[in-house]
Length: 539
Image 1 (spheres, one colour):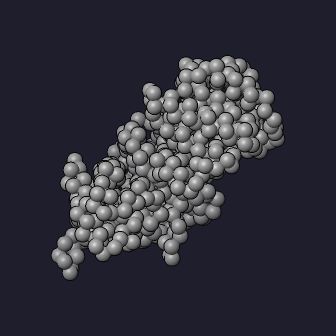
Image 2 (cartoon, rainbow, N blue to C red):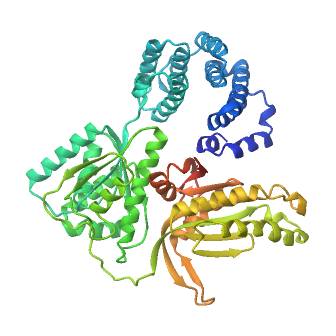
Image 3 (cartoon, rainbow, N blue to C red):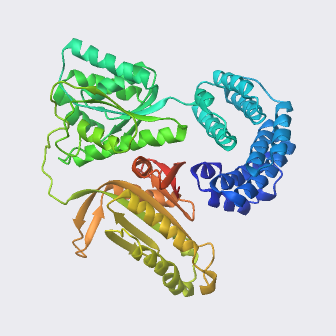
């Protein structure tokens, strides 16, 4: 439930909290979780509703503190009292939080204890002492970046509430995330490579980059990877193809010495993601997709850590000749308005490998897909099935028909629905409209159980566009269709979860409309590897 709350699925988390009987528990962890859920509602509201839920959250945090929640419960109760407009109660609880017994050890437990003290001091107006306590907290747990980000969000919220400066909180800001890109090239003069890597190292330091996402092609990609690793940053590789094919297509043709460096970077990478796991088939769109996937990963990581996302590039200043390459990456990132640092590249170089096999026009496309089913359909009595189709399926049909950007492909079977869209934002809007429409249905009036709920899984990736030889209808098939299908069984009823690839695109281009909160990873099934999934909600 905590992961659901962190992902933004507050309504479902609160329903599960009640269903599991935790709302009547006096366990301090259950009380703290209940208070956290009320806090999330308050932060998403305004006016009287915000104050009412803040008061309820404060009461729940006090109950948690009285049942063993200690300083953590008291300081959160103080902050919620601030949001409720009760300044006197805020000061009383913040003082009690400072007086509460606690530990001062290093590590994450010590970090949260000191961070709670810093929060209490800040609420009491003792900002200089709060800053010193925060500095000690970070020094005791320098690697607890997620904890730092959580504290940064909390204290920034308080600063905004009371109109206080927030510059002193920058000590909590984790290192920046970066998308790295650049031209492929053959071996260069030793002095040229040294100068280029020196420029890269300067950028990594200047931008305070701690996490890098990108490809591993010969030339600039590998130099970026080596530079990031040398600086102690995490390297996250996103490959457009199966590794062997990637090496043969984008590494070995530029010089055998690049292959060993490619393998050395892979061995030290913190993660390797696959845009596709197939050999290269002449479709350069998969390289563009891989770059956008890497860009999305960098931006999602920055959002999760409350830090900056930047692009660093080695670029000759020329527009890309096709859909992929350094020029295309630079242009795509520039559209987001996020910071960008470019090292000039003086000699022309190919941006993407030449096609090794021609592909027929229209056979491939990068599409957004939704798989939808209804939790509880299998338990219906036969006599309820007609009403199910007249109410639930008809409700979905009406919602789909009303979309401003309807799906370009639809399939159904039983309670299952498969929708395909050209744009991820259109698929995201459709998923949320479908959920909202379903919640408005009066199921009981037609003799249907109230627990019937939609589960929606979404993904964005390259697919094959074919004609079904049996039906003569269009068919959308391929490994990425399977990715979308495998997400749906792990979705919480009444929610929509999307893949990292789709979440990244939404975070890159539509962050003002949609929020994608990290939930976890899918359950491993047979030969299908687990993938990261994100809860989709409106801003």
